[in-house]
Image (cartoon, rainbow, N blue to C red; front, top):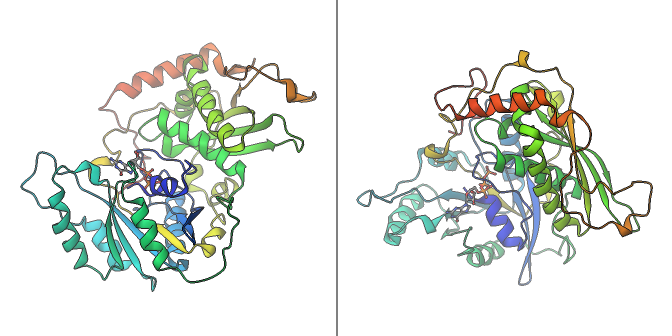
Amino acid sequence: MGKSTLLNAALGHPLAIVSPTPQTTRDAILGVAHHGTAELILLDTPGLHRPMTELGRAMNEAAREAARSADLVLFMVEMPFTQGDKARIPQPHPGDVTLLSDLGTEAPVILILNKIDRIHDKRLLLPLMAAFGKLRDFAAIIPLSALRKDGVHEVLDEAAKHLPETPWQYGAEEMTDRPTRFFASEYVREQILRATKAEVPHACAVQIDRFFEPAGGGVVHIDATIHVERPGQKAIIIGAGAEMLKRIGTQARGRIEELVGRQVNLKLWVRVSPDWRKSSRDLEQLGYRGATGASSEASTLLYAQLPDDTEAPAGEIVELGTDDEDDGLEPEGIDIGDDDIDEGQDEAGVDDHGDAASDDDEAGDDDEADEADEADEADDDDDSTEGDEPAEDTQ
Ligand SMILES: Nc1nc2c(ncn2[C@@H]2O[C@H](COP(=O)(O)OP(=O)(O)OP(=O)(O)O)[C@@H](O)[C@H]2O)c(=O)[nH]1
């Protein structure tokens, strides 16, 4: 729908990860936006959806919990596509109608119609706004293009009107209450979301094993494990000759360096953790449980959506291989950074930090490359299906 895009536009910084894949946001993310004299503590929640795994249930709960504690709810829907169907007056999506009637909150609700850049005939906005207006008493209904930052000012103006008067809770420079290591894992996941498709992005979780930020400055060292559910997914993430993993790591490292303002040495490992999304214990270990404490502080909430049917990944699901074609559960690793970096030395002199470099582990070995090729071939086969574990049902 564009909740994270709106959060980033409000912050003036791409803090939250954004991708076209539904269920990108897994945890509520708090962002602090200052607008005039107002401090808006925005909480970007996962989108509400029909869950098929423990992870899906935890995501929905994070969104609902955030809604219960907010002073104001921003309920975002997206403009339906109307191109080529000009005669059709857009109607509220049935899923949104249900969510709005279930939205048990005493807080005022502002409806945001996002992606207005997608409609050519802006006159269609009025009947849609009127139709939504019949469903509930909204504090305001605001058309928006979060992508083009068109209407963001209006959203913040309107939201600020409904906030309680209290002292600011955060300093003027503070943007979030989440630690940098959280965003490090998010930025790796973001690159996986961008580089892969079908069920692979949904099957990945990123765990930070080590985050070392030397107090006196210098290179930040990060070791992270990418958990996948199946060996075929591992092969895809690594890619032929480990090219995919290098690309993911290089892009993620750039994003992390932008956030920390320092050079980063990123080591990535890929591990098969079967069915982690279905295991409460695994979810907890990966930080998806009890990680929503921030929600109680939220004063404004970006809440809830049901993605358009047309964007659901069903039908793109592909056969990725079977468990028995892999070598087991051993992780494969790669070092994304400068080979010259010596952890025991003074790192201030490190330069030339641009190239991804593979270390001497098995990531690029022939078996792995073959496996990746097979997986790529399978990926091209639109007719194949994953079988027992589709991506989350987005409706
Ligand atoms: N055309 C258009 N696309 C947008 C707009 N806002 C967001 N998008 C795109 O919509 C997709 C989803 O955006 P996100 O911000 O990740 O949406 P979200 O609601 O946070 O999604 P989840 O995290 O999956 O719940 C991305 O590809 C965005 O670039 C908009 O105003 N116009």
